[in-house]
Length: 388
Image 1 (cartoon, rainbow, N blue to C red):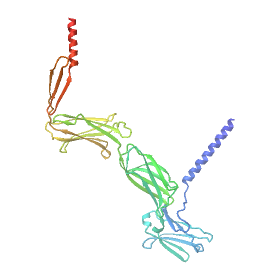
Image 2 (spheres, rainbow, N blue to C red; image 1 turned 45 degrees about the horizontal axis):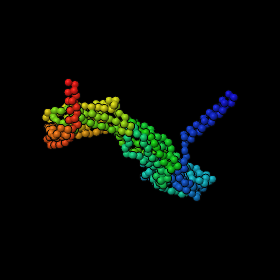
Image 3 (cartoon, one colour; image 1 turned 180 degrees about the horizontal axis):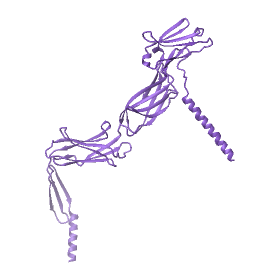
Image 4 (cartoon, rainbow, N blue to C red; image 1 turned 135 degrees about the vertical axis):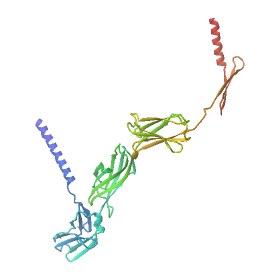
C-alpha cells in the first residue's frame, strides 16, 4: 500500500514538473507572429533589425535571388541583404535586414526600401509600409496615495488599428530614477488589459505611469503623468472665535486618514498664524503625537493689527503637503452688562413674579407663578413652629 501511494505521488509530481517546464518554454520562446498578410508588403522594426514581409508576386520565385536595400534620403546605402529563392516557394518571404545599432526608428522612417528580384525593381518609402505598435493607457490624472486603483491598457497596430493580442505588458510607477512594478501580464484577444493595483501609501507628488508593451510588432513604451495626493483630513480648532490684544490663541490640529479615519501619527506638521495685513506673526514646526494631534499657543501683543487672522495647519513635507485654514477675529470688544430686578406682588397663595433682565441691547420679561414657592415656604415655617 505504501509503495502504491509513493508511486502515485511520484507521477503527480512528474506531471506538475512537465507543466511548469512547458509554461516556461512558452514564456521565453521567441515569437514569430504574423504581422502582415501574404499579399501585403510590410515591415516592422524589432531588436535592431528591419523585418520585411515580401509578397510572392508572379515571377518572383522564377528569379534565383532577391535583393533588399535600405537607402537614406541621399540614396546612400544603409543596409543590404541578398537571399536565394527557390521555385517551390509560393508564400510571402520574411526577410530580416540587420541594421546598425545607432540607427533609431525615427531616422529609419525617412529612408526608402528597394526590392530587386531579377530584372524587376521596386522602391517604396519605409514610412508607408512600417508597422508600429501603439499602446494607449487610460488612467486618472490624480490618485490618493495608498488607495486601490485601476487603468486600462490597449495595444493596437498603427496602420489599421487592429488589436495586438497576447502582448506582454508591464506597468510601472516611476519616481525619478526609481521604478516600482505595479502589474505584469498579457493583453486579451482585443488587445486590452484591465489592470488593478494598489498605490504606495507613503508616496506623494508628481509621478509617471510607464507602460512597456512587447507586441508582435515590437516593443513600445508610453508614459502617463499622474499626481499622488494625500488623502488625510485635518480638523483645526481654536478655543474661541474672537480675541483681544494681549490674549492667547490656543490652536489644536487633529490629523486623520480620510478613508479609514485612523490617526496620522508622527508626521511633520506646521502651525502658523497670519494677521489681517498678511504678515506671518507665528510659526511652529512640530510632529503629530500617536493620536494625530498637535497644538500650540500664540500670545497676542498689546498693540496688534486688528481684523481677520488666518490660522493654518500644514501636514507633511513642502512638496506633498495638505493644509487646512481657519479664520478668527482680533478686535477690541466690551462684554455686555446685565441688571436683574425681581419684584414680588399679589395675594397670598396667588403671588406672581415679574422677572426683568436688562442688558445693553436686550430686554426679556417673564411672568411666572410663585404659588408653589409660597406654599413650600409656609410648610417650612410650620415645621419650625411645631418643633419649638
